[in-house]
Amino acid sequence: MESFARRSDSAASSAEFGTSIHFDIFTLFPEMFEGPFSESIIKRARDQGLISLACHNIRDYTTDRHHVCDDTPYGGGGGMVMKPQPIFRAVETVLTRPPGWALPRADAYVNLPPWDGDAAPTPPLDVPVILMTPQGRPLTQSVVEELSGLSRMALICGRYEGVDERVRTQLATDEISLGDYVLSGGELAAMVLVDAVTRLVPGALGFELSAHLDSHSAGLDGLLEGPQYTRPQTFRGEAAPPVLLSGHHGNVERWRREQALLRTLARRPEILEDLPLTEADRAFLCEQGGEMRNEE
Ligand code: ADE
Image (cartoon, rainbow, N blue to C red; front, top):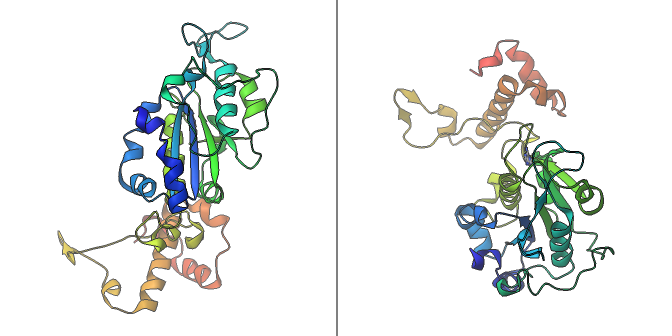
């Protein structure tokens, strides 16, 4: 794991390839990221230098004998709360250094860079510090698009019952939630965010238009994507729609738009209410009347 968590080569590859985005992830469980960040599109984007990642173990920034990162909540109650100091120390140490910097393995606990717990250093203002929490703003495709325009961001993964409130009030500049449910920690949410943002980095997908026309994307005006078919032409008695084999580009485009409208109407009708639909879209939906809930 350590070569992954402390990729000293990431700075070199970013210089070589012109990395677009660097993610600094702060977690108590850096090993959790190994598999998802070493496969498929994220692996390729890393290999090509389009993104770089560093997973920083918050525990490395503790200085007490037992490397304690949590404590009982003031006022009592169950569970444990993540202490502020190791998180502040980790984030402020890393973000006041160039992207790609990570604490050398041998320096964990024992040879930390100096840090004044009472005085806030000034991490770069253009690097958001995002706390992953079920109380944050929902991660939507438009949030993903917004984040894909940044060159660096920090993600803090909370655990236990939560993090000390001072992390929210003084360190985090944004809070993002994966959805209205509670995970065991922010790590899975951070992985999802990194994956969704990476897909939008130019060059990360083999075929550039595919991200642009994904469900919820601006290229599809926020609609759900319609059905897709590939060979064989007929499978278990169900044939691919003939229009897709017609070679008539205009008809294919119109069919796809209509299918996206139908699918959105059937599955997520509330999305349609907020969209600036064209006259042709409206006319098509009107034609379908109220019978379109099962898309066919
Ligand atoms: N941590 C725990 N639950 C979460 C959620 N739903 N989103 C982001 N981070 C979380």
